[in-house]
Amino acid sequence: MSYVEAASDAIAPLLATGNTVILESTSPVGTIERLTTRLREARPDLVSPTYVESFESGDVNVRVAHCP
Image (cartoon, rainbow, N blue to C red; front, side, top):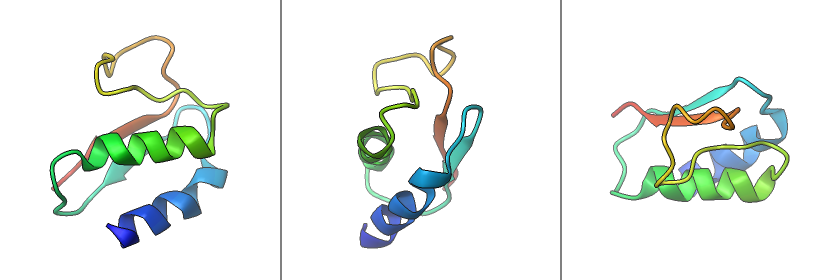
């Protein structure tokens, strides 16, 4: 998980409205939620979905997805 955390820290300053972050890795259950939380803490100016929010929410401007 340290590699995923390092990658999220590296891309956080570069994220912009309309971006999609795709985690392409075999990872434990809950990784997307942790990644989204980490990005949200690093960039409170951007809106990403929480675990319970719809991916299609109109307020969301940065999306996070998983591609195993």
